[in-house]
Image 1: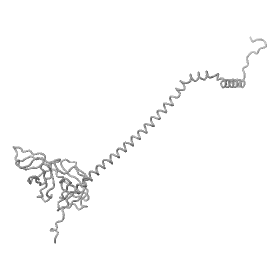
Image 2: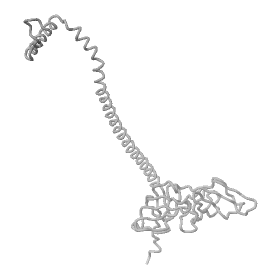
Image 3: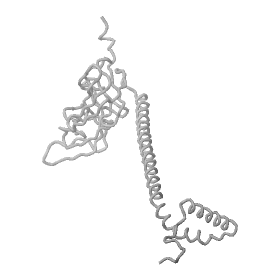
Image 4: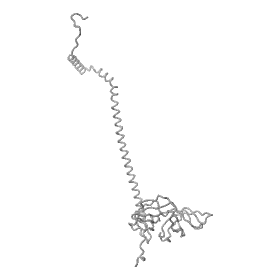
Length: 282
């Protein structure tokens, strides 16, 4: 029971009164903290308690920033690597082209110093394609009927005989190499003058139908004899690398290697026969 003279229920302050009280209390605390730093211990305690929470809240943002930086650096490195590979391929292609040009210039200089037989006019030619069939040895040159070329003309490089033109097209010519299996070149041994026939064998060449007692040895050079009137005399054709004299066969087995760069030369010389003044007289 409430005491006589006291109200049955305590009346609480109204909202406005509470707001005013809390405002005054806040101002007192602010002034006290500013003047005497009396709440420093409370601030430090709250900061210590909330520090782990702050770190936990910051971790996702820091992790996201690291991931973004990683992918940015990754893309930059990929772009840089791609650019370096592109530059490397470009420089490699330029270097290969430079080496090819140097090789062609060397061949041109050597061909410029080549002394063609007096009855022939040398004309330069470039190889468009090289043979792929090991048995049919042919190459394609960059000129044909447009340059007045004809089948049967010899083709040489600075080292010796390459082959002969066997087919002429409007803008190209087909050359059958001396290493073709269907080719036979009349030659003579430079050391002795002995005339023999050397046949194509795909990659190499061989002398056939030569008696075992014939004076021929490894290292001998074979050059065109000129008796077929197809090739001028004196063109280097092949070098003897192997001589076998079987006792059960009347013919020696003689292996040779072509001297000219039949598979390597890029610039060649076509020997165009000069007109014969005697045949042109009326």
